[in-house]
Length: 347
Image (tube, rainbow, N blue to C red):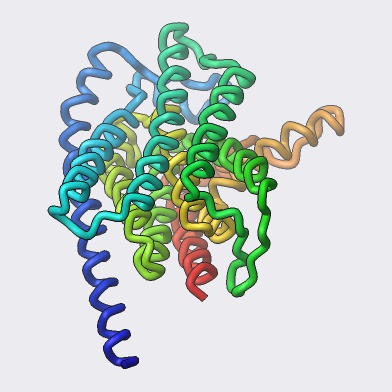
């Protein structure tokens, strides 16, 4: 009896792993193809990233096209929508309508945030300066998108309102309070992935490490649909790194960075492993915290600073670290944190 269960579990993990790998490879390939087609268009249209004047180290990046997140968003949509169609017609797997809806809502959360980023990028490029949507406008749109996602998850009985404590079997039932808490985390997190996108390959590599942790957690816990969309994120970011590694040929822009945050948060909430994913994503979160700490400490102390420059990756630049060293160190830390977060979920 136990042997049969063990064999069945191993068979499921193997099948889910193969499926996730296939999705990852397809999205990777389509992202590379999309990049080779779209990046020359972005360059020809002179859709170049405005460079912050306060980051002297980035002066050489002037002229690099942005909005490259379009490449991996399109690739992800094509593969995931094709997968959903195949699943709906019973060509692959056994259809689970509730889980399929959750996957669609997670994709919606990512794409809607990506659309907010696209509007922000477009306004920046039209103005030819580093100002797009105002903070209030961007926040309002993110709140609307996050609230709509949570409302639909709740109305379809797919919202997990129990907060699991990593490395234990303890969960706290949040009830209605899950809605404002999750909304706060969603809005904060999508902005953290946006802030992290400040060095060549940084947001892409850190996001890829988090995606691996999400895939492992999903596959081993039986969350097949979350495994598929996490695999699509991994393939998207690895494909984008072909063009985004140092020296970057294209930047993802807010279009891509907000999409990443939306997908990660959708996976975290649908799996009911919010705290574990926060552990996996702590590099993203600390980047945001470093900016907030710097801003409020500067105001409270009349001009004193915690970091030489915020967010924290700029602090290390001023300490003399190269972009490659910063990205490598942050990536390695993210890999370790992703492993820790996955263990926290599975144990």
